Amino acid sequence: MSKAVLRVAQIIGVLVLAGIAVGFVVGLVQWVLAAAVIVAIPLGGWWLYRQMSGRNPKPAVRPGGSKTVAGPSGDRRSELEGRAVLDAAGRCGWCGSATLHKDEFGFPTTPLAHHRAEIDAMLGLRPRTE
Ligand SMILES: [Zn+2]
Image 1 (spheres, rainbow, N blue to C red):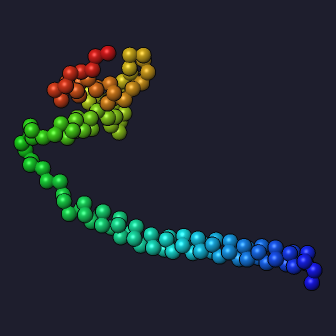
Image 2: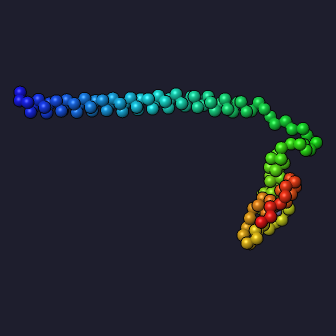
Image 3: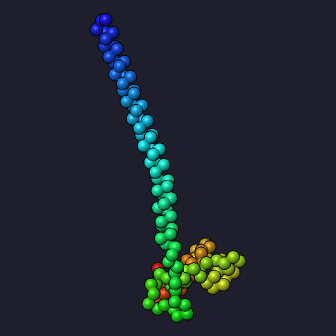
C-alpha cells in the first residue's frame, strides 16, 4: 500500500465518521424535540386545567342595590364605557341617536369616542380639552 492510498483511506474514514456523528446528533435532536413535544402536551393541558379551575370557584359577588362609592373607578368606567356602544339596531347606546356620530372633521366615530368627554365628566374627571 502506497502512502497516497493510505491518505485517501484516512480521509474517507474521517468523512464517514463525521457523517455518522452528524447523523447521530441530528437524530438525537429530533428525538429530544419529539420527547419535548410529547411531554409538553399533557403538561400544557394540565397547566391550562389548573389555570381554569383556579379561577372558576370565585364567582364575582357584588353587593346588590347599594352603589359602591369607594370602589375602584375602573369598574365604573368600564360600566359607563359599556353603555357607549352601538346596539343591534345601530343606535348609540349612550344617547339613543340613530345616526352615526361624527368627529369634528365629519368622519364617523364610535359612540365611545364621541361621548368620551361626558364619560370622563361623569367619572369626576375633567373633560379633555384640546
Ligand atoms: Zn351618542
